[in-house]
Amino acid sequence: MTGQEAHTAPHGPRPAAGGGAVPIRGLSSMATRQILAELADEFGRSHDGIALHFESAGGVAVARQVREGAEADVLVLADDAMAALAGEGLLATGTVRPLWTSPVVAAVPSGAPVPPFATESDLPAALLGAARIAYSTGPSGTALLELIDRLGLADALRDRLVQAPPGVPAGSLLSAGEADLALQQHSELMDLPGVFVIGPLPGDTAIESTFTGGVLTSSAHPQLAREVLDFLASDAALKVAGTRGMSAAKAED
Image (cartoon, rainbow, N blue to C red; front, side, top):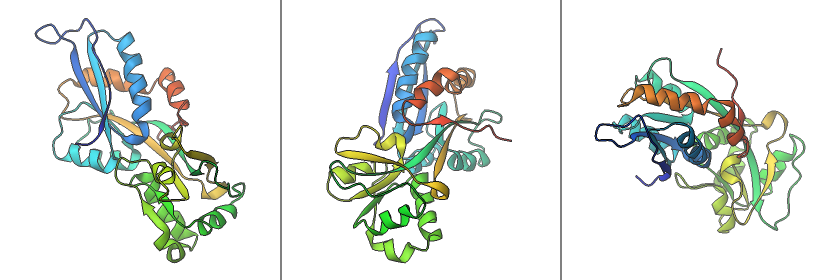
């Protein structure tokens, strides 16, 4: 796997056999990588005896790992991917819950002209004015392609679309000179060198992705995994997610 390990933190009592901390492994897509790294730290400071770490990769790759029997306890992915995995019996019943919502934003290379982006009509103009448009393999990329089709621009933009490799921020194509407009989750475009974030897509063109957590049925420590999930759904965790451009997900009906 080419994902990045977000954080590993050893902690105290509730020892595993042999006296060490109980390892809890989480998997996530890249959009929540930095959030989960910080939350693993916070969880470790308040939960003795659990060594929590998250490993992050492209969402499609993570879902494939789960289907192939990856040994893990907690999973955080976009809600559509989680629903599919739950339907396949890979997530423990009653554990799946929405955590955070992230808007898709537009970005340009730092120092480049910034197109108008205040109204719905500005988006088609910005797309048509871009020579190369970077987007992701994740849920934001799928939603963007659907939006482009709805706007009637699929044919006009087909040869301008550049999909970033799995696990690679679309914004990195801006700084590399491979695109002059990028659209992706806000959390993935924040703080990237050489990238200026314009803002969310305007009006009814707005795209949001909800990230959902759950306990894997294969978890070796399901009760501890539920404790991790409770923490991820807490107000303290939401505060951290907010620093990465995310907000509270709406509760499911």
